Amino acid sequence: MSETVRLGAVLAAAGGFLDAYTYLTRGGVFANAQTGNIVLLGVYLAQGQFRTAGRYLIPILAFAAGVIVAELIKARFRYHPALHWRQITVGAELAILAAVAFLPQRWNVPANLAVSFVCAMQVESFRKIRGNTYATTMCTGNLRSATELLFRCCRSGGRCEREQCLQYYGIILFFACGAALGALFCRSLGERAVLLACLLLAAAFLLMFRNGETRGRGRGKA
Image 1: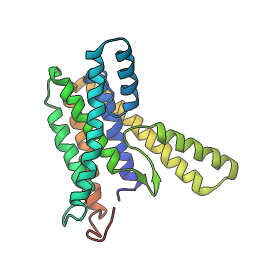
Image 2: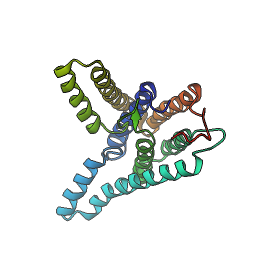
Image 3: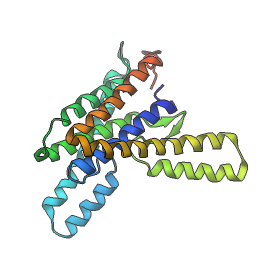
């Protein structure tokens, strides 16, 4: 189930929502796209604005920490008798984001840290759709893969390439839709808008139950 298009679409919508949320509501920081934060970090360091540069360093470090924690969860709970380790990761994301919803504007730094941490856990835990590598919290790699497959499909007319191409573009579309929803709800709900992302993650959590993500536990499933 963790590699289905349906689950990938839900997670991509959550990823787009969170990027819009931190950018529009939490001081113009991208929680998911660390490339942008690294560029801005370098720019402000070059200008000698070290305090401003630190604002972009924090989500970068939080993202790295999220990757490590996701791997620790995988190692510790891979053979959990009741839950798949990816469900535990999603549950942790849910709890952290619910707390972020109640952080005021003066706490934007810890809020961005928490969201970057959550996004890293998600991108590390969910990396494939039907065996193909993809990301639910950023689009650059997905766009590259989709366009490469489109080129191959136009040359060969292969059905497999066409289906994979549509899957990638579909994930990009859901990411964009999530960002659009984020823009709409941030305008009306402010900091509380992140609770909508919690609903998307709750749907992902339940989808894994419904489709038997915990089947085969103890048999070495990744």
